[in-house]
Amino acid sequence: MRSIALTTAIASFIAAPAAFAQDGGDTASGKRFSVVGSATILQPDSDPLPGARIDADGDVAPTLSATYHVTDNIGVELWGAADKFNHRVRGDGGKIGTVDSQPIALSGQYHFGDADQTFRPFVGLGYHQTNISDEDIATADGSHVGLTSPKGAIGTVGVDMNINPTWFARADARYLHGDADAKLAGQTVERDVRYNPWTVGIGLGARF
Image (cartoon, rainbow, N blue to C red; front, side, top):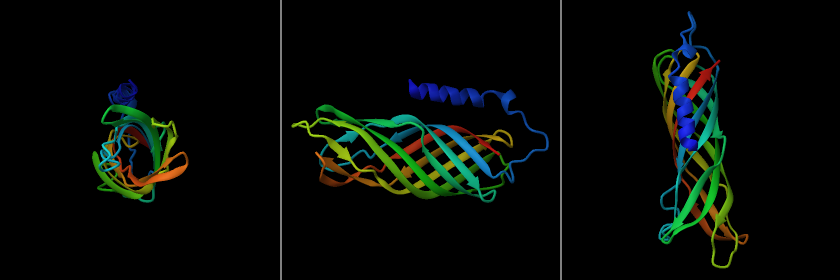
């Protein structure tokens, strides 16, 4: 239901032409700040523990980004989840628990083409840290299972569709590389648990 509500809200914004009427004489060039709100799917690595037959489901959550545009083509973006992604952890016998994740990242970006052209693809590379919380995973003796925070490189590809010099729609995909350590009752029992999720987001942005 959360994903449907987010997608519907974004679609309603894009479908309202009166709200995005062309500003006479305005231009996107030279505007140095932009913000984007998106509905984003995050899917963790499909095989976090090779040979253990454990998997984690993806989830949808709202994400926000703020970018300072050094030039019309070069920007620095702060991106992160506005809410937690909840992942159901499954084994051979079905669900064995849940865990939440909430990433934040800082990236440099390059936006291709002129600021006012209709479609503007972009790429980015940066560094992320993902907070892992609310681990609720069943063990035989009832011990708590914890995960450290994955951190590492993040790569981004996307495209903006200019609606007018202020408003634009965005679609993007991101890949976050980073491993976690698994702890049982506070003691590390497994290193380099693969997190490495990818995300796909659809959103609405404004530049100032």
